[in-house]
Image (tube, rainbow, N blue to C red; front, side, top):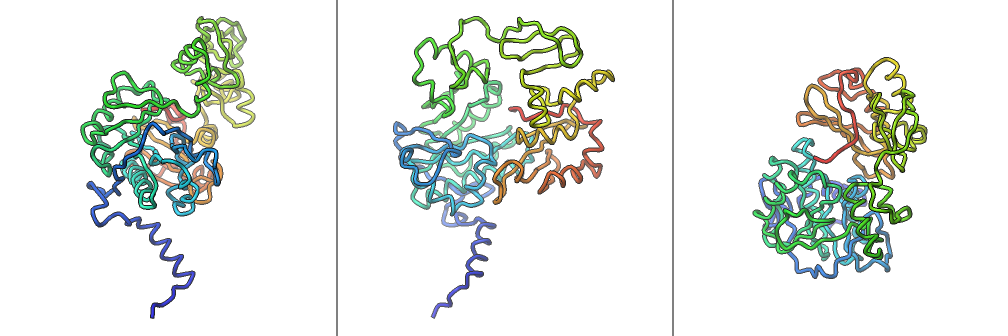
Length: 406
């Protein structure tokens, strides 16, 4: 007679399995040096693919059941598909197809975290396939070090997905990995989320980011202008509610005289209120005072106008304080700085209880170290480099800023 397990024993086994994640380790279901689960090649009609962001998924979503779910957004917004895979399965199973989640593989992340991100990508894809779902693997890479593992766990000839969204300035780095991916995986079709680079080869099917789907109804003149705005990264010009057709003059020309809020000299701004003061070097936006009040930062400088005015009076260069840097972390989710010619990254990582940025764990790392903290207070009081508290080192920190590509 089989002994019936108690609720405690069942929960204990479940928690252990969530820890070891070895469901695909045996029976030829894993591959590569790091034994990534294999996402199997599937026959999927790519002509039926219409994307929906994971952040817009919901239970009983009859309207979008024919959509394919992508994860091209901040990691913390979809971390629960890995952490709470069983609970998320019912919701995800109603859709036509899933891309494997695009967990970040940044070049300045410790290699261990890059490997973990690829493992989570493959594990989710293999898990969903084991439950009968259609899955297309998303392929991401960092620098050449990641080529050792970032293409493992994908069968040759598979349909794959890549993303060029907001990577316009990273073509050289992107193409290095893309060309290597073509050699290793030999994909039958490449789904490209956003416009492909001209140098990309292969059987490529382009998809407009879900953020821009409203442009499908634009007339040809407005569509040409939209592409111009997109190329120049004018956020307001790419917003559906604000978009309008301008003349083809440069909308970013700084031809309006204003008084610099930092030094008081004359500065020039464009029609959107964005400008730069040639006297003190302050770069400003229309809502900088409001952003300081609401979030304790500014854009694009990060340092608040209040701090900037104090630094200008003292003849100091503009630089965010430690407190402003942490404010930026909770606004942008991913931050960088330099110390002793080494790049350090601070980013938010979702946990099982995360409902907003404030609930996320904080990861502080470089190529040679990693620290993790549960709260802002812990990070501010304990984060250190070589045993010296980060807040005490702040005067020696260079270029504190939000994350950029590359």
